[in-house]
Length: 299
Ligand SMILES: O=C(O)CCC(=O)C(=O)O
Image (cartoon, rainbow, N blue to C red; front, side):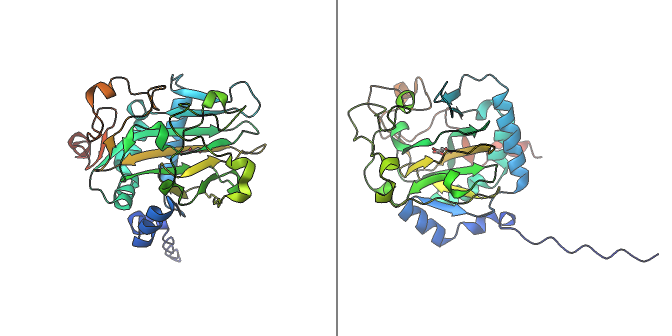
């Protein structure tokens, strides 16, 4: 009987050597622009895990599932901080190369999870995620921080998250107010202490806006100070996205205006930390170096 031809080795993909993607050029671009796109950086196995995690959260009745534009055409779901109750996200963060990639990007040996954030746009047309920066919502200051934006579905650049490169080094504006965003996407989250967001969508030609065609496995790394907003999805399209927000050694606790709590809620945190303290709290689990009990689980 003739012997079967040996199978040709599968071609290498960027996700086979994910740390090699974080080149000095990528690190420089991140510092300069606050946004970097990486093609085919995350292995499909990790995408499957994210999918299972998102399904678990959607089925859970969690109080941390919010509906943006609730009751209006184009509403969509936003879910924050499910790491502690989502074993899939624990495996993802502890075992995948995501934290190592961000550690290299931000230049920190230690890495903590600020929170996981899921956006699900499905069931037909879903509205834009309003333009904003993440920084005003978060009680943090420092440089060593990044989110990895991972979308499970193929999407064209006009439906992707959009960015204004370099805006993380300019004004930090107030956030938008989710409850008022349908009427006025620039109405302030806090109100008066921070400058009001510009209406980027109404004057797009005045802004340098970038976005990317996404094939599953592609990711975008974004700085929380960069202006960004998500394109609306069209009929028949589905967009399931996980943003993981990780930070390193130089990130400290910082206060925000008292008029509203920061996002996601961290009751008690400001009684324990004062401005300038390293951001250490059970709200923010250590991811790297791998905690001992996680390493032991592999023995
Ligand atoms: O995916 C989106 O529409 C919003 C994502 C976002 O704002 C973020 O990851 O910070």
